[in-house]
Length: 560
Ligand SMILES: Cc1cc2nc3c(=O)[nH]c(=O)nc-3n(C[C@H](O)[C@H](O)[C@H](O)COP(=O)(O)OP(=O)(O)OC[C@H]3O[C@@H](n4cnc5c(N)ncnc54)[C@H](O)[C@@H]3O)c2cc1C
Image (cartoon, rainbow, N blue to C red; front, side, top):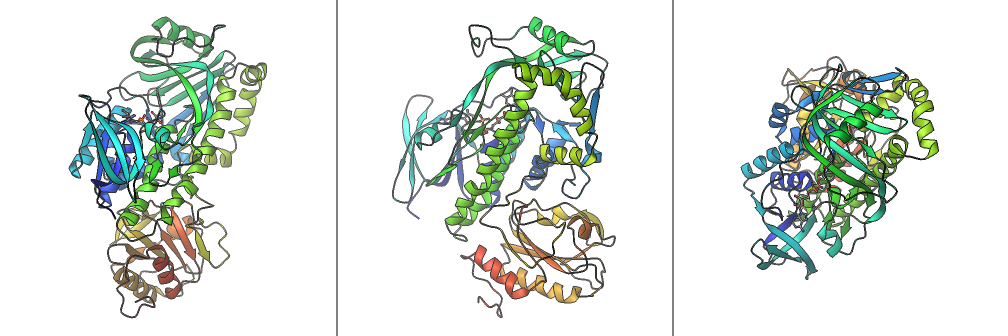
């Protein structure tokens, strides 16, 4: 690699940039992160942290700080004017195999708290956000990038780096300098939002949505008594939308509440208010050579579903381990192309689904108004009465079902998988015994390595000892890059790689029966390989293909 100031430069210290910088540092990559703002933001903005993001925060070792500050939102309520209400009880719905997670509710945490916690962890990892530095231009050098940066005093400087990551939000200067378009449009309506105190008869803690003929209003519980984030759409007047950032008034919020909520409610006071326009846009390319886009720089959509920040966090979690393997010479550049292949479809799909949902909940056409007033109460309550639909909906909202079915990294051997998770899926959570103590399967997957899970099967074939030897061989071949475990319902041997599954719950959650099966899990806890029956040579070949820059250490390895 040519001489650079830093291998990776992250532009923007919002949730996406802070996640990426943290992850790179955790994976042992030297990183710099700059932000044009002289100080961290202090407003609440993104409030809902989805369960999948909490799983990521656990891997990032910030979960204790997050749980200490935020609050659980155990239920989502859709309430209509005619007393037809639907409540989604989240812990009940986050129990099926694909949804099962340690974090069985949505979680509310102000974005400034999220950013503060991520910044603190980053500093513990030895990286400081360099503030007051604005990225102004990019140029490609031979095997590196030159990033022009302007300091607060007007002086300029150039930073040479191998990769530059645009985490600089919807108006991304990195995206523009890289010549990547941002395709889409702006919604005609305005939105008004307040972090407010509400006096009403509904309990604290939950999330409430009130679709009505006039439009839409929602109330998301915030930490604190009677504190809610309320927001709704405001029809643009005949002159079109008003000035984008004129402050909405107390009277506007109370009028919206009176008009759209089917119960008496008083807005006691507002703590933070905002008026804004919404956009639906996505970059057609998330990568241009040595430039990557992450988070709002790559995609923006309506807030329906509270997905924006969470999607940026997952973008970053997806990209970081790949960049680390390439920066450390373990994997080749093509691995980086899988970022576009995996995350772009997620961003595009999100745009489509939130757009449709948004059209129904806030659209002003005669059809949308009729739907909200007359059909939605019947349809929503009937559709959501079906457990399978509720389960799918909540798992999707919680981002636990994000999958990369078309990823070039996916591979499988064998057949008869039935209900097993496929390559590209998130590795499922399960309850197991680790060192004889109750634990969770994800505990084994955390860290920076790939993990091979060798499920012994429920056929009583008593092959634990042989599988433990396979696990040993893998661990020995790639000590810093891969670890391996044997999931056994039998527990006949005492071995450090052995994980107990006495009630077969892990086998059940992985849809496995009598036959043994292997899964290779990536550092971002997505499955990249599954194979049955288990074949040591095939597994080692899989790992060698994925980690070509690592010399396997096993003496008798076919790749030695
Ligand atoms: C009112 C509101 C409510 C929301 N609610 C939710 C929710 O409940 N759940 C959810 O998931 N999402 C929500 N969102 C969306 C969420 O806030 C965004 O998706 C999220 O902030 C995106 O994070 P990011 O890091 O990609 O970009 P940003 O948060 O926009 O961060 C970009 C950073 O880059 C810096 N920057 C910009 N340009 C430059 C430059 N040229 N040089 C250097 N630095 C630069 C900025 O100062 C900023 O710090 C909400 C958004 C709003 C506005």
